[in-house]
Length: 87
Length: 411
Image 1 (cartoon, rainbow over the protein chains, first blue to last red):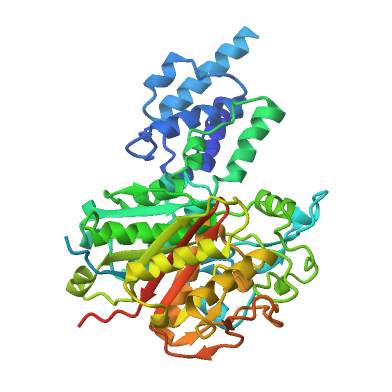
Image 2: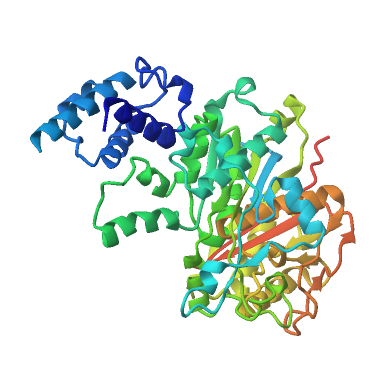
């Protein structure tokens, strides 16, 4: 999966789960301020991402540092690369 | 403190006829049935009753996701019904102080569909990785009540009593007393339930569900009819907005009716079978609370679900209290038993009857059972001035409740 495909998969999964406006799915979109998600949504976001990419991220410390949609993209791309290299 | 007079200024309904109290009432007047043959029941081994009432033609998506994510169907029904009640009363967030507006809203059981999804993961998939953060919120016993309070920003009391079929009547009574004694200024009151075949199967098991009309669902239930064979489980939500007479007059709100009496009693003798003596006691207490006599009541809206014994006991009880003159009908022939919603939904219909000066007959009552014949059953739409209505609700677990409303005479 290319980086663009990862970003597309993330965006589509989050738009579907949280009924988000596709036009707002920009990398600098703040999850709380722009996309109006909250702490409960962050819990569900982890579940959605784990299902979409088939790897566990619940215990990852970096998840707590995520603020923007771009942070999610970068986190998942990095995680995918680590898994690919590991395998 | 002298009790304050309490009036109803808004009402909202979600029923098997769709969304809205006008659609609900119009369908009742036209003698429509909201009962269908339910495919899930028809395909289940060992089930004899295959009929049910299901809510249709609603749009949950009008509720913002932020709120909707913690709602099962019954909370969706509740929010839609409350929206209608508040709108009818002319109460909007920007023009009222929500500090002293509360809600008393309950359901019979939790959302079975939500439980099914959880236990499918738990027992079948043995995998909890798909469980969402809001699952628990959909299953809390006060789910309907808190969801409404969140959507409309209520800051008063949030109370969720549960007494099965008595819930909708009890909640209005509780709200009435809170306002009468100055504890709250506005209360949204009612009951809600969402349908799951579990309910039908439970009543089927105890021989209380209708089983002979699976091929002609609109012919059942048949309260008080010779050929009745049990109840039909259904779903929905009925909401009434209560406030003081003084507040309604000050706001210039249209007063739909006044709540004047309430009683709730228990029958500790049997958890499933109502007794006439127990029902008589409850109706008498409600009359006493309203400080009126039986001849002041112009119409009795019966609980009558269409069970063999329940309808006989209620007929005996009504005759004992009122004699054979007062008009009586049950609305469950149209919509089935909407469980926790039945008291408040049927109260909404009773308020419409009171205001439109007409009495709706019991649908499917074609041949009155000889053992029920002692009271005056309405058998066709009757134009009649009714000023005072007594509403009955009797629940599994032996919980009775009666509410009395009348046209508001405040000058």
